[in-house]
Image (cartoon, rainbow, N blue to C red):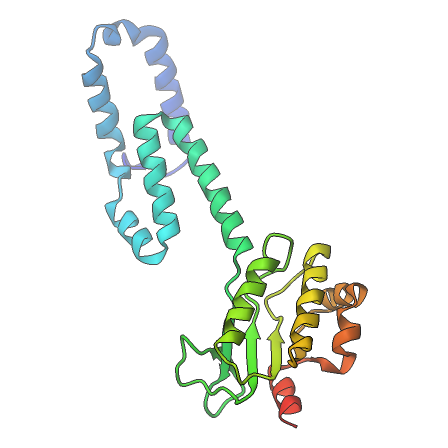
Length: 237
């Protein structure tokens, strides 16, 4: 592309000339110093270096920037294949960490609307006395349920006046058996503390799993709401 190629025919000619060079012109390169060969490769690949891309990575996502830096360092020190393998492993570890640490958020209603947003990002959002609206930030499974429970309890401890809890399940696509059992125990514990539980925007498949886990029975079918607004109005009544 840097040489002006416009179609796949350029690859065909490049392959032919590479084969011609390997078969007949190799003696011309046999005695060339390796630093000179390295300089040729560097000059050919120099246009691929993009410092601006790394700056954009640093500004947009620190995890991706760290992954890119690790891969570059590993390729320079260990080798190309080793660097790529390390980058794949790091990406998988990042995915596992982010999946097992979903970010919960306390929600409040934006003025003059029925939209509910994170109060940390929207300080103007309105909260209600005695009612905590809390959004679960991801799927619930064996590796994430303990983190979700800890974050929820921390939010409740910060609001000692809360006697009603409305959980927003809009970002939960599935819940496994371990998470279902743990969530059941968490709800029972909160109910023993005198906190009533309601749920909003629960997907049908997730609600089926909750029904099998016994969550719907202890919460009550009437405590499931299609919208957060419906749950807030019911809790206020």
